[in-house]
Length: 207
Image (cartoon, rainbow, N blue to C red; front, side, top):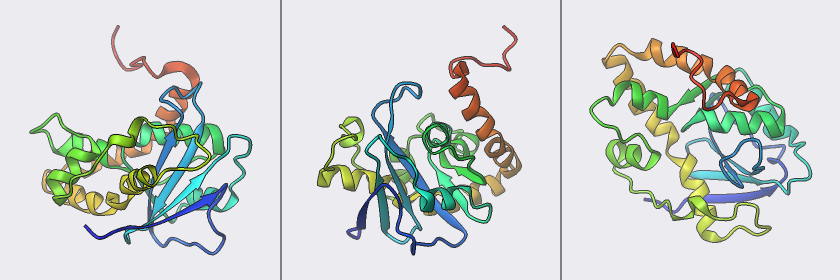
């Protein structure tokens, strides 16, 4: 595995940073409660072994350059577990993100031979890359990120393009790509329901 290029920016992406047709996106929050825990870091990558990390102090979420990328209809946003990320981004950045590809949803639709759909599981099986996830529960609101945190945040986006390509091949092979696309299209509504307090309620269930 080549050493990645990692750049940390305060409050926004550089104005001259552009993406063509797709961008990998992930976020780090102070915790997993959307109502309570604030957005701390957003990381993006073009799939070129380079990651850009945007740190937020919690007092300002203007980030016009980042928002421009997230709402651009010509750029596919690739997430792993997009449901949480787009809800956090909607709450703090006030953006409606589309189009979306979620590697976790794609995995659940096509890797039906396993219950292991975490990012670490996908990169291990499909790419032969072993991720280290020790920093997952660290303090992402810290003023200075550690080198370990930077690497952790970067690896959450560096491989999403390659995973997307592998999973699309599998979805096409099993004739399930249309299911995935329909699920991706529902994600903004699912995120809005989570923010409205319906995160633990299956609104489609009979009971």
